[in-house]
Length: 257
Image 1 (spheres, one colour):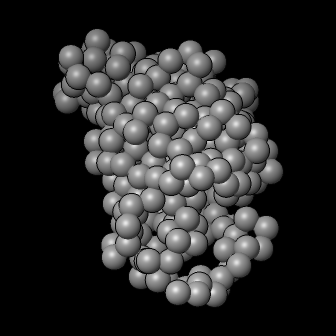
Image 2 (spheres, rainbow, N blue to C red):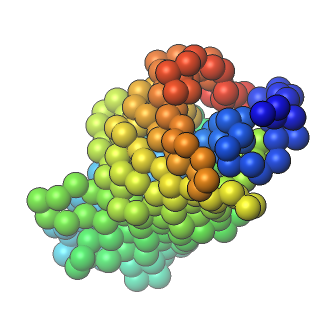
């Protein structure tokens, strides 16, 4: 079969929506991975704080933990670019040209965050939030159960210059450390007439990088075979990954978007 599509920059043109088309699957996987990276940028500084919320008995302690996560060493670069408007345990957080330390991207717009202590959750609502040249709308929730890993659930619409996708994450496990953040779990994604399911296998973002540097994303588009994207140490700087074991450059390097 001849696939009538071609590459302009890093955007595939003319591929249509045939799920059996390898180029269509590849572009869909790229957009999905970029959307998940947006989730990481927003949740990386809050995941450790969510774990500490279990011992917070007062509104003041909750507020301090949230603000430390957002504007502290793991959050945005500089507290002057972010403001907080609290009402009880809900807050509107406004970003103005903030740079996220987790992924190194510029963050603008507002988030509404609500904290719950029993069960321990941080719920975020986004409306036309921009991350670099990309935008995110929707909601996500960080949940903590004693003795269990922190998880992320999300219902987000993602838009970039290269494509758009609607992402659903179902209690994806998040692991944070001084050097970065890792996600494992499953979700679904859709764009136009395309839809599919994906699995994140220890996908890890080093601190300050907008793309993962290890792990894999396995995407199965409805009507097509599975496609495995394996992230490499060179992915953030060169955009290179392995697609079903074959090296390819499919991402714009961090700093260029």
